Length: 142
Ligand SMILES: [Zn+2]
Image (cartoon, rainbow, N blue to C red; front, side, top):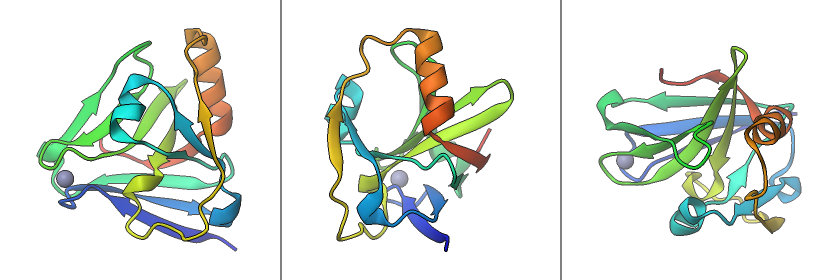
């Protein structure tokens, strides 16, 4: 049974819908320890068997930010500053994560948080991990 989990930035200019059949209590939540994710207190969630859509009701508010190995676009709101998730495009396919802290309604049973550092990955390893673990993206603002 699939459910939709909606999230957005604070002002609502950008957002996402994650469709997954995994119960929130079984979500694999990663607290990436890079300086970007720590600064945003980001909790990354994805489901390789799910789907995610990112939208920008106010496209001029969408800021894409690349850093480190520069393989993915991290999606931030220019208006309110909230980080909602990230998208990587690889061989024509797009994969994404969402920031569970940007969910409109945080599931009460969101417990499985693991602190992870990906510092030792090279570009190929990083892209491969994201292709395998991130959620296939149905649509996102180009
Ligand atoms: Zn905003």
